[in-house]
Image (cartoon, rainbow over all chains, first blue to last red; front, side):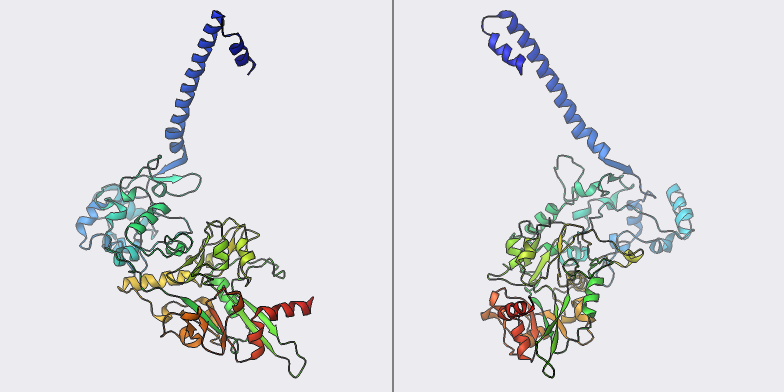
Length: 225
Length: 272
């Protein structure tokens, strides 16, 4: 502080002091710009990489191949039970129907049969869309009652030949698919992000009854438990 | 794709508890704790610190033998409608929008991850239906495997209360959606306490639906904010105008009186 005061006091009339102040000012601005750039790079590029650990699925499942062989589309493997609950990722019992023995020559399939089918172990799939414990989600309400198709929320996963990398938040343990891949929060497709506001936005747009007295939005128990 | 009101007609879920049938066995309290993952401590003797969404109180008429009489009164959250539709005492004071009135079901919801534990709602609730988690829940080893996956567990520092087993409503609706229905049958959605009561004292259903037993027993008058038409029925602290959706039935005059404020103040005065 004292140097700044001195500089302003002596500035008028002394040319040498003027030059010194300009040089110091330039250095400060330069250091600030460098520091700002470094902070932005750390914040926008390095930190997200550090925050999420990258995991591969135990078996690299080929959706496109299976979808061509099944006749009921997604519901062949991801089906509803009679009580309205959703089966989610298939259990081993469903795979065994075809994969009791090795069918082709894919190394992933050979590993699947040897390590899981023959040993009777369930595959520990990593679930991209697993929500926190306080969240209630009903597939049947969206698909049967709302008439939505799978692509609306899950994107074109059914046409993929490899499973995407599972990114796990090292602090919360949740999948990056919930927070979204874009660190700035931009969203292009409905499956880019699965946060509360994304649910609420679609519900408001599609005319789900807004029954909350406090917020005049929708009731809390619609999506919470 | 969707039209207004496609979620079905708006409901007013409520309860009728027959105090002449209640034996005070406490099965409703146990069923409630098991259903809703309510935490408990080794020492539950201090009732100011314990959490019981459903609590059975013992009332006495204060008379000597042979006129002495007692009555057991199970008390869940009363799911008050409040002075204006949905402005129940707790909902009006919550600064976090953690508790809310759902006009679709008439249920006062409590979202645990939203609550920050100021406890205004506990001060506002005239029925002591709300409880504060003074500690993180700890279950005896192995018991965590018996927790209900449809009800989220609560952490230290937040308020919890009865939600009319809302997870059962969600489950029932899933089955209805699977079968292409928008409406539930009366018995598809029942609370744990209702089903556990061995005396059949607790009845649960939609107060708006004349086919449901709760409607027939309470005979709520919509022009008088749901006041019971059945002379045997009353609501707790009716004069506070909280307009609860839990009705009590009794043929005994002194039990009716005990449900009112004046009588409670007299009782409290007699004890202290």
